[in-house]
Length: 185
Image 1 (tube, rainbow, N blue to C red):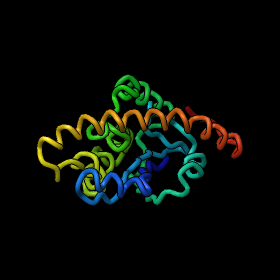
Image 2: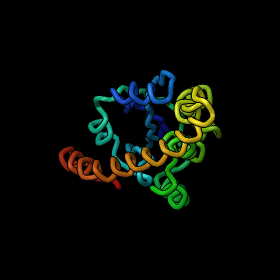
Image 3: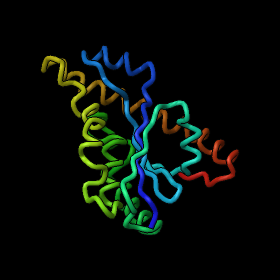
């Protein structure tokens, strides 16, 4: 069977410092997670996306990243497609939540459903720090500011993520065409 991999990217660049200042704590990164199996990377942006690994390597080549080997996949491509079809209705643009339902959470859910060796998906000690970036982002703020930040930051982030997903779709297709690989969706 194929290996299941989780790739964790640092996509914030200079925005990581800006976001850190706004939440009154130093964030180690602004994470993005993609789950790779059989040459395809699956992730959540404005919808569940599936892109060839070479396309994502090209698109995010400048982002620091680490790829974790989660062991063999329990499902073949058809089984993964069935899982994705089940998840699609719960992972649309309207469902995105910067703190509670983002690409990191999606990666964990997909890994749990596909990983043969680990029913937990990405092992908790490895993923918890990445989850904490979003889930605990506001815990250094006074309660009133955290409540306001939770609402405002989620709306702004959803707009940014949805816009980014739509804006980069064409670029991902162009990269796929230049590499001679499937465009994905």
